[in-house]
Length: 314
Picture (cartoon, rainbow, N blue to C red):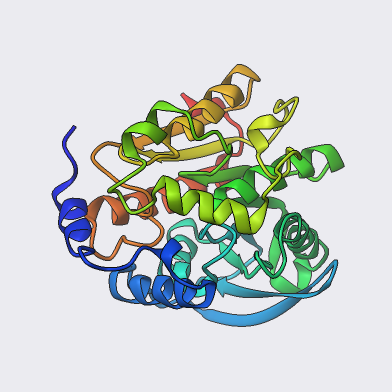
């Protein structure tokens, strides 16, 4: 399909703006935050938003807890923001966090994990796992049901969600689902989608390399690239979103196929005409992005209600 007109208009607006990988890390972080403030999904009202901390392996991990209206026990989504493990924070997914909390009628715990280059791999992974374990251990205080926990995230956060889901399987921690939004599950730069979409669609090959150099310059561990995991069977059911004009498209869809081949229930939606970032960060200016966020909330509501029943996965 041709590029979505709203995505095309947004990309045209970037003309003359320096690429993130041409900036300092601090400037890239500030620019990314400013873009999302302008183009991101407007937040909805929820019952409560609280800043908390969870104990991590190298100190406290900040988290933002969104609680919907109503009474618990609520299910919970532990959410990991994107940004190449270098930029981003809970602010860049603030709007989607409120929408998902309302649509899924679930608590959303948005994680401010450590990032490179100050704290390279595996700091983000270690913090992400620690927060999941903290959520389970503090279920009563958070007014959540520890038997209805899902993980999710976009881009680098999709990577972390996949890794946390595999780690949870290995530790016997039950999860009811994982939401992988154009996940960065592999560092292979030679896929068709990398060649086709590696320039001109915001997330470029040069920017991907810039991220990887600052996060995991020698990613030999599957926890850096979950596509390299020996076995993906037995993990939580997955909802995977990919975008046609995204260099990460093929890796995300290959991981989807691996999950299916391993017997994991999977629903996959490719948004034709769309670019990386359209859902989590640009949904305020892209109708398909808003629709994707809505679909995540609706999907999670069904997952939390029905679990792994055939009705959901037909």
